[in-house]
Length: 379
Image: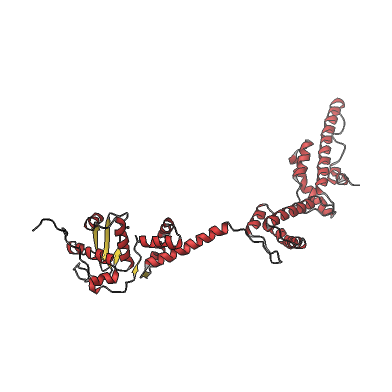
């Protein structure tokens, strides 16, 4: 008898019925794993018998398959509901921890059910923690939907987290993942298309409103919202009477409001209509700048403000410019203060020389009742 043999190794056996049920490659791998059942003790968790096998052992005993093939076939068994896997994909893991998806009860036997008794309908199961799509699915997504492999894999973490949080079971996780990736890819394509789409002209009717971005920009410019709202009908009427819409309505609206707001605030500050002074009136910074140029102390000017407001509110008079009135008021009192100081020095000198004389020419009553400063600048 010759030493040469075309079949030098122990043959791999598989059940034709099992192959017809779950696929030829799947049947070969499942029955090959039966060797693990026969020679290892299981770890029992949740009524299932779990086994661990080294990836190197599978590659050595199934030399016609690569790591990618083992990953693909094992994932197919998971998707068909035959196996449960509790380790990362074989592409990255050195071991495969698996269980046949069938309750073992209290039996201590680790032998899997006979192949012929496996159900023809896949069982629903929870999504494993380290589930990953098969290579066939990734290629299908790329060929039929032009979805890049990396894009599909980037969605895996969220997919697993979502379905494990829900705790639902499924017969076909591959199909769910395919639908999940396709939906996200279409949304991504839509966003990219919208980014390059030329915006269609907006119909400028009475219902038109500036967008939130425009309103936020105007709010940051300290423009009163009521003023903005009141200006919308005017803006719509202006462009409708011109017979067309501007290309960038919101930008035009921002420009329109800023111009109108500048005119409005300027008219308040330089109004030609006489008005009463308010209790909260404050002089503008221009007034204090002018006083500083005249070498008049700013704090001195501020000290005169309450008296100024009370006097003019009690008089119930209206004027076109309270800034000018206040400027005259401060200059008057500043000049009077220095005149009194000068007069005080002069009288002191005379008193030192003659020993007689007054330190001032005006009584306190005259100072308190003096309102001649209010007549400055009157025509």
